Image (tube, rainbow, N blue to C red; front, side, top):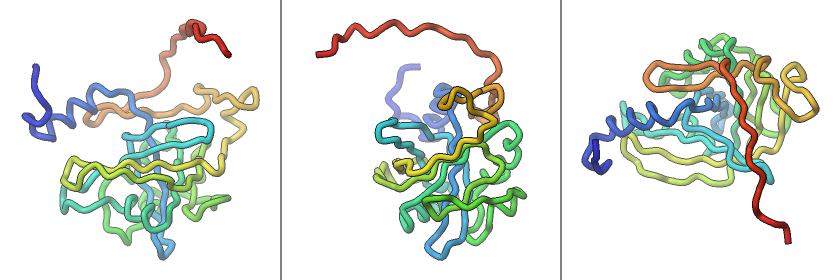
Length: 209
């Protein structure tokens, strides 16, 4: 197939993207609204941006049902804060329960039977059972359209880290075998990080001045 994306239905472009940009890490994003009501939703359009200073991003899409922004976007616009909770195999089912669109007054933590922990530097709570959390302050919201299939890019600066000692070694390295993260594929597909291989990266050819 050779075709310009504008000549395909956006749903087809979406299927090609999520079927080929794989595996995608999952940002399980907790937020609160201006009244303090919590929200929890997973986003596979999520990634790290840089480390100095540390930033991450996630991309809430426009809801298909009513062409409205998702609650997570409303909340980060209102409060400027969010928490990334890392999804593990043990939390995959609970994460899936929070993936559906629900009315704004529904507490996804309760729907999924998840205990909460208070954050240290932001208002949104953390998923207590997640071993890694990034507490973030919003620094940019990039608008990329307002129709179904469009989305926004929310960039947050990490202002506090939580890393459980059980998944940490060497002071600053994550043990994947103990973390057991889950990745997102196309359709209903997910993956585990179980089949690893290593390659030594070639040294830089740039000379320091």
